[in-house]
Picture (cartoon, rainbow, N blue to C red):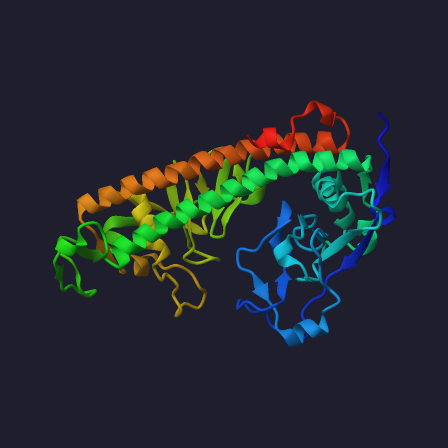
Length: 393
């Protein structure tokens, strides 16, 4: 079967976003006008870890630069080529100047298929090559117009989009379940160890300590008495060898390497850059020299949630960073061994399920990523594949 390829200019209108007017600022307080940033556009979806908004008066100045449900957006600066479809909750949102929206000009182009076509290795390579060469890489509108995609019969497009969406929907559902389980563990920590409403608290006497009243049988010590912040090791991007070991910086995973420095599970704490950030890793990992990794005999999940609540930032330092000696001097309230063991068992149950879901998502992404280029190119016959309902069953 011969596959027709077309340039985007033949089948879509490409419209740019708009930066905020001079002097205007974002707000995290909800208004009627959400704003989509480049970092919100990822992997075929548009979602924000922290949604930004603009005020009514700012909106009036840039009201022409909005998106509608189903619009496909592409980042054109920074992490060039990220793709996302506008969801219903962002209908009418303003779009950053670092992205463009694509509006089909023909009924023979399905928006979801368009998004997946742009996520394919072929289209991604076209975008990266088109943006290369400049001091500040940018994918201009005229370059977007020149990108070629396969142009299949619209019913075939919809079938392909439905199959790939089935994988993405299941991945999204698992991510929501993971977030709920993690939040449950965090709330149990706060209930037991911050509010002191742990099992049996009614029969436990409160006693005075240097940090205020604490349950009898708990002890106050220094963080350094129970927790070691060990230094990571320098590993430049060009020195990394291709592998599946996550490399951690202060912002989280910054790459992959062929061997680990620390066995998982483990905790990573930002030392420079994103100071005081706290990350959890279930598998062996390589912490670089901008982070510490944790050594402790205490249950690691207890340590993880405790470190998330610590204030590590040294505001007096000329260069912001986490001073290990100052961190070691912070007070640490250690509960009774029985309660710590009970919390560890509770976390093992809750967060053990998150690991199962994470592995399922890894397998789903792998399968989807193998299918995507073969489906988009027409190499794989969609009639041979199960219905999306069967895929997610």
